[in-house]
Length: 294
Image 1 (spheres, rainbow, N blue to C red):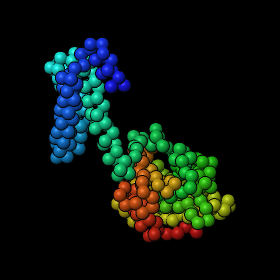
Image 2 (image 1 turned 60 degrees about the vertical axis):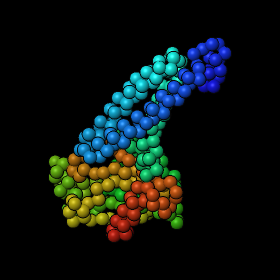
Image 3 (image 1 turned 90 degrees about the vertical axis):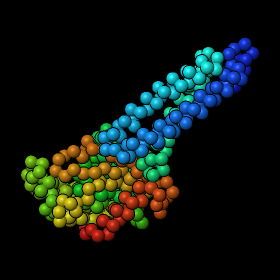
Image 4 (image 1 turned 180 degrees about the horizontal axis):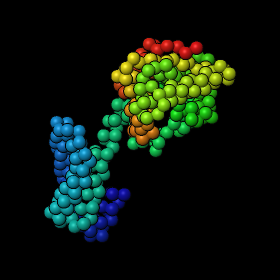
């Protein structure tokens, strides 16, 4: 389309001269140099400053975008190409800069395994949606899986799809006898046995699915002696290549409003180039050191 526009303008005596095209190319080239140098400067400044300064990286985008507009305008008039040359130079420059600032950082995150983020679990891939995503694999690390048990039909269906004789569904939960649960309940201002009873009810539900419906489920319990030894992450591994990761603030009831990260491995089992590998190793190490629930 761009070549056709050039041809039409040339045939009709338009303003697209060789000189105009040359300056349009120069405009894009200078724009990219400006974007590259400006981006490196801002990133280094952010890295050496406090985390709150990171917001400036967001605001730097429209600022540099405005600079592009001014630079391409000046070069357009300098070329004598009037507005046609300007708009092509600006459009191409904007497209490339948009890729640099928006898509390139996203690609780098994706290569590390971070493919998405929910600002709040309740507004993203919530507990019900995560169960519906399970097709052939399910490992879970949390305090009691009580929120998954709030959706019993979806939970059972997810386990039926994921479990098979050679591949059990794994739940790694806190022991209901852990003194930390009573401490968290007191912090939340509820009866000290509230959290323990919730974990017991969740475990009972899972055992019923395992024993009465003959589903291949393995349950193990960890028993941290202090809050500092409690697993801070809630991990849900699904389909063998995706992990939904969030963290826990014990005793404050904020879980549904916390962010959730979508982590993925790209090269199959054994891939060590993404965050998925580290999280999976973390799960396996804790799994092997935890008590089997019969």
